[in-house]
Length: 238
Ligand code: URA
Image (cartoon, rainbow, N blue to C red; front, top):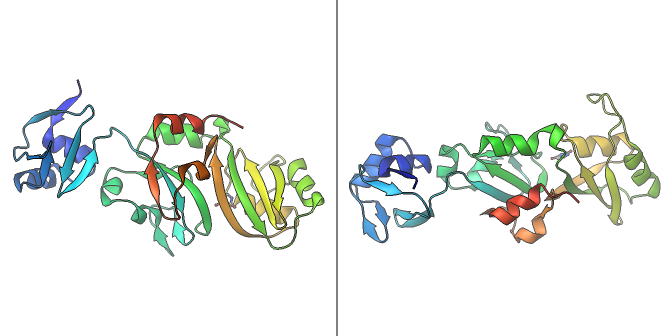
């Protein structure tokens, strides 16, 4: 059974340094099964553990795997410069446990963004060799044409890619194209559209692997924990 002292457990969940966590415990802010535990030395079993800090309920998680419906005007970088950072949309303790975006979306791109504090998970999903498909809906300036779709499918050349970059593409409404990419180059959708003679005016990511934003039912700015079934979907292609 995974056991650890109460201060260590709280620290692992992002409630601050050991000193801060001991302070919280000694101040009576921490409850388990409705009972205040004021001794940080107590060893607890973390399996299925639920606890309260300052009246808020938490479940112990070794790692967190989150999905966010990213709004526009939010930066994915760790040190946002022009807009608010994406971590500001999550509880503070996720930042303290080093939750990071899995890859990046531009500040004006909306839709499905994953975040986690599991380095192996982040690496597995972002490694170019894994070819996890990402599905976007791009709104373009003019009506889409069969020629534009054909150009994206045949491949366009970008300065930082030696090979032609191809995308699965299909028109979904007059000015909207669904585009599926397996790489994640900087501004890739926008640059591919520009290279094909078009102009992207809005971009939304609607799926990663087989996990769709629609299935998560999140309003813009909302997030949720992903369960095992949803995590499996990430690596199901097509
Ligand atoms: N392609 C882009 O151009 N921007 C994104 O945010 C994601 C993919």
